[in-house]
Amino acid sequence: MTPISKIVYHASRTEFTRYFWAGSLTFLVDFLILLLLTEVGGVNYLWSNLAAVSVGIVMSYLFSVKWIFLDRRYSRVVFEFPIFVLICVVGILLNETLLWAFVEFGNIHYLVAKVVVAVAIFAINFLVKKIILFRR
Image (tube, rainbow, N blue to C red; front, side, top):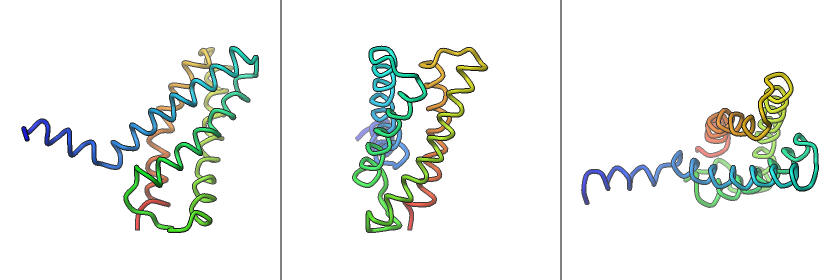
């Protein structure tokens, strides 16, 4: 194995790298739901975002427990999932507030604002989930 392939192999096995790829897929689904509900369905962007983020929460949880994090503080979903959802609710409130502020006060298109907000919340969510749920 070459030195570069060793680095790539090791990086692909880290929790943050797996979180990045899972988060990217989750964001793509989230973004498409937002776009479709708003542009095709005529739903207000904030309601569309709420629905999209809710789907993202379920995807994120499944990725987190099945693939991303190696250690879990709680072995039972009945304890773990409510805490996960609580963390995500805080993320949703931050997501909705920032999206609204960028659109209403920053005059930024809601899809551009969505990308900016997602990047900001991405790192925060990883750290909080890792510290509270996915370490022993």
